[in-house]
Image: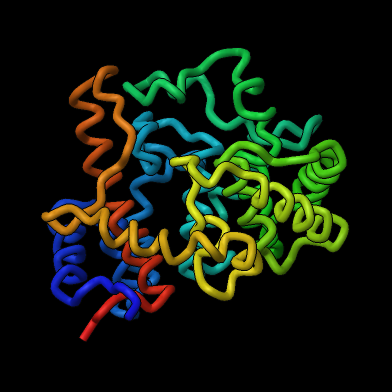
Length: 304
């Protein structure tokens, strides 16, 4: 019999999110369970959006800066698309306007973060420098590929010139890339590949590139998971990670802490202990929600 998360442990995870997680993660899980509304999620998400339309304020917990950034805005847009927020909703209109203004049109990419990241203590891997592009593969997949996915989702609200500039850069990226090596580049590229709205001359080469890259990626990479490629059993790349799914589900269930939550494997308390504790708490709620959602997708939760 397949291992499942017991009803008791499922309820413990829900209580953990409700009691110690951010309201946003609690509302996202309620929405996923059919017990909450998209409006409640948007109300919880709204405080993370700035007047300029971009998202900041620690929506990505390792970046507590209040300033808008492309990385954090990609997460905001991801969540809006997930809950079916309409294209004319102010949160959607605002973030698309910010992304339109922030795009590097010459290269068709978004700089992942800006120097305003230093307005608050942050994880060391988010240190700003003029050479940041070299550390993040010129931003060609992370965050650009993911943002493009959500722009397709909201195509009716996106300026044609914005889409054209990003698509031109993405087509060049696909011709120049033999293998996607970074775990976070893979995650962003997967989100674009899962879009039903990408044109064939982007969708086809991207899917082929991802199949090669996923097959070659180190299965021991702690930054990657088989559930990135296969968030549910019907995912188009599930066959590539099929052998890792069952061990991954068992490990995920086994990783739940006694208090009902899951815990990040990383730590930057050596930078700022108080800031890390705030981020860690937020991450625990986020990771707990994601763990439960993955187990639900694979039918591994006893809810009754």
